[in-house]
Image (tube, rainbow, N blue to C red; front, side):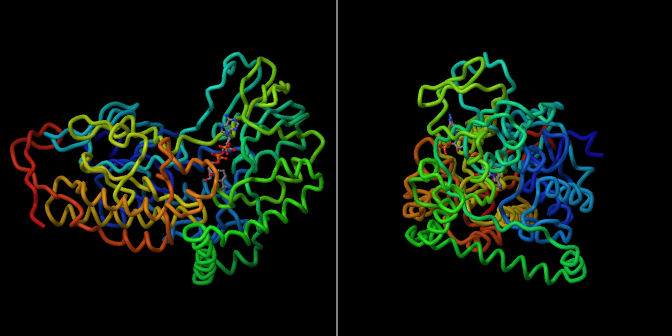
Length: 507
Ligand code: NAP
């Protein structure tokens, strides 16, 4: 049915944890008039796109699922990418989302039509309209590849970690890996044994802590299948234990000392060579960048076929890579583990609100939103995990579900109040963001002495939620109507062809 239609009440952009979750919640509340656009061939978002060797979530399995769809089948205490991908596919089937999906269809432009009161969407499958646009493109979806001189003349294979080339066998290859973030840490131990040589270009060393990953036994899985309450209990315990990091991350970075000592001991134990150890020791407070768990990163980089070159890559040559030390290391494969466009939110370049204002121009390099969802001047547009909803310590699925509650409540309010338009008030938006920024001032992300993708081009933290995650859940439990202007519409015409005027609904 969705295949034929072009005009919808709601359009969801993206079918990762956020967009898929939104679709499920809409169906659960009886809303069927919606479409989900997904540029990839399947649902899953980041867990569909990232297929690199060793790809695994660093949040424990029992917490990394929707609260309404626990998964008793996880095979490890930290979930592997194929298992998360399959879990999300099962959710799409089980919750009847498939008929609403337009897979392989990317949204290239979204423009608010003030007269018709709809979003006009240009997609790779043509034009659509929707009264409400829900943007769930995910913060980690657009690979970032540095603009390096000589890159186009490189004679070997080049790819980003999120676009892994499985046809390119790395056995016997001379591989250069740029970056030492969460992705590189997982990849290098997998490729090092078969590669001839691996050169890692490390601009900033990460803090690495011991990994608690282990297989989940058949017996445990049987227990969880029979006793979902037990799995819920484990889930709650994991959630609460992760929240214990919040006082150190948000209020008193000194409290992170104990975690930093644990990471130092891990490094000392796994890397006996003092020179290499010094090279791998971060110079910022732990938590400032994402803390990565791994038991095999340090052992891998101590192998004789691995070299860690300090500093950024400066140039690419046809047969190698030039490091900051002025030495060219030979390479026939170049892997960019250089992360994603996060704070520059690429999709904001293609969203045009009232008066054709471009969202990225409104933000001027510092994305912000009210409750991570709404922006003035962009009526009937909501983000799922928009600005300042990110976490370094706990499950994003928790934040996503909190935001879904909020959006479902917003849509219900619109329907109940007969509103055709909804827009956050500028004063509520400004006050909310002022408060967030003042809370961020003392956090480890702002004061820990590192530069990370949490900070935007203006040096402002537009990524992280500064507090306990249950506070966000509390704040988004119900739609807070006084922060918004709701309008009814009068005039002639219906659907996308209408020409109508909006009249505010008194609060
Ligand atoms: P990332 O954390 O942004 O790391 C990018 C790396 O590339 C950094 O080490 C960065 O150095 C380096 N880099 C960038 N440009 C460079 C250049 N020109 N020369 C040399 N080095 C350069 O990216 P990621 O590892 O893909 O991870 C992104 C996020 O995805 C993570 O923070 C996490 O949220 C998520 N993730 C999670 C998991 C997991 O759950 N296990 C796994 C993978 C990813 P600087 O540090 O100096 O900027």
